[in-house]
Length: 336
Ligand code: GDP
Ligand code: MN
Image (tube, rainbow, N blue to C red):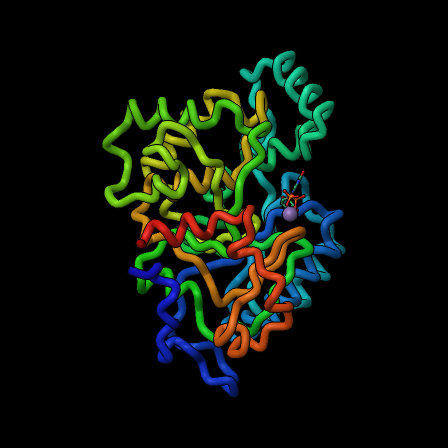
């Protein structure tokens, strides 16, 4: 059998190109952007594309999050780009900073070793705070409480194609909980003990694993070792309830207690991916084939019919899907 995304989206999901008001049926959904004030130019670039390609037709609200206070200039420039509701939130300090119980001597030594070895962001504490926040805290933010679905956007990304159907409704109607466009291998140096922690967790909590999960996306030997495949989390369309649920929360707390966000450099991409792959059914994880997307240095460019229909401006021959470093073939294999 084929992976579900090979089935084209039913015609009934497409809006009329001349529609002047947002569709009557919408999901309870929001865009989430984590950013610093200094990210403003990249933020407006991403957001303008999202508005033009999709959201001026659908009018979903935005939530901006920052560990610092957003300045007035930031709020003003961003708010002008959309007619939809825009909210700005400050992240509580205890959701962001390195916890007191982390052994700072050990953490410093790890950062020095990693930056000496040229690991990207290996010497950065703020980057680690960001990864831990995205892994275990963003969905706990007050401003996200009213919502069920979210679409994560980052500064300086590209959206290549017109999207004339609502991906949140696809999530809702098809009972999907996690959507991605790019998947790839994680750097070993950032997660040396992550899989050991995952195995300890699953051994202690076998009942939390989903039946029909996507373990074979993560592991080629039935869970013994991690193949380092993960969904690239700079793009995510997800169900917040997946992260809010008991299984993922216990999982995050367990990982957090190991200190690996600071003693190593565990990313939110592998942590979310492992969570989604183990606590959801494999067919609840969706590849958004029609969404043309680039975050440096990789892009998903829709092929064939999908490229034509979306009037995509990416070069079809530049497409990460089946490059050697992509994990999409492992995703496809879940359904074969
Ligand atoms: P990369 O994609 O892994 O290279 O990392 P980015 O620099 O793009 O950071 C990922 C996301 O977190 C982006 O949305 C950034 O704007 C945001 N981000 C990174 N560091 C910080 C930080 O210290 N504070 C805030 N508020 N946002 C951050
Ligand atoms: Mn980024």
